[in-house]
Image 1 (cartoon, helix red, strand yellow):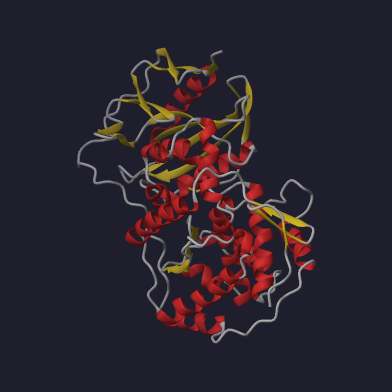
Image 2 (image 1 turned 180 degrees about the vertical axis):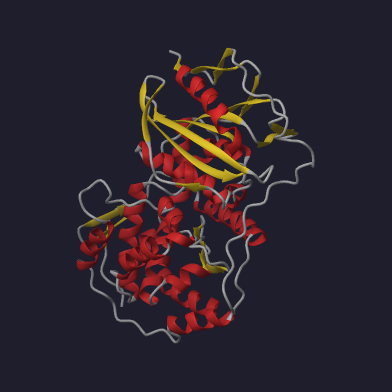
Length: 457
């Protein structure tokens, strides 16, 4: 039985006193579908997909019930909803424009029951229904970044490279595509609650699933998932679970037929398949065998003044080169980077300066999203959440340090990030990269460069 709705705008819907509207979007629904198809095809080429028919049918039935619960005012006839399972244990989901949804085997195993799994699917479905991915692309236009800066949507979603500086450069141009806006998360939670109730699932189970990801999934990707889906209640003196419970209390739950197969059976079938593997790391393009990253000259004690874009100026070691690349500029010594036709694709030493759209509005949250982008491309990234307050270009900023394994040399590398917000709200960040055994010498060079950074009027 469908629940009564009060329709408002063509792009919005009201559930009782709760109004949800789509953000501004310059893309046609058919373009969402095209982008989603391209991304889904790339994902299927890159990632292992579980082929178990029983699991696929169970997930499809659950997903179809939620799709049928979409309000008419938010329904897009062109959208092609599908539900697939990544065959790895990491806690991962992908909600692609136009309808494709991917859920990892780890998420299926973590879900305590069908209602909790329905909550996860409903949340991802809500992002698609509200067209959040292409809304992020629309928002980027005011920053004159351009449509994906020459990268395809598929390249964005699969990561493309595990090299830290290359991913940092990509993040500058692609930050608007990451689904991390707190208001988007709030709206996705709210719509998910109503989709669940209309489909006959307990909406409070959404909070149960989010709690499981936070508390039980820390070791298998839960932290990364939560960084991609920030808590909309974090700064409001309440909790995400409370917001979900408040909305759920307003919603009657429709009668529904129990599933033909309980999720417990799915768990049993998955166990019979044996332990799930970890998600495969993103693969870099083939790099020529040689001495890249070795015999690199130490940073010169002499400096020279350089510019990064039209508004930033800083001093770098005299023996470093300037390597422009889209919305980011990298400074590195000879022997520390590999150049191909498309530009530098691999670094072992260097400093990168970039400006991106702030996608959370909070400095440390923007840094966390940047680090999550690093972690998605390199499974060996480790970070202890700790910041130091610093002055950066005359502004309040933060710095933090993490470690990784070089995609080029296979050795440990040290990564230092500095960040601040500019007067227009943009996210300015600097990434310093060096082999771990040379971190001391390079930290001094990085610090001198960062302390010299100036914003030109």
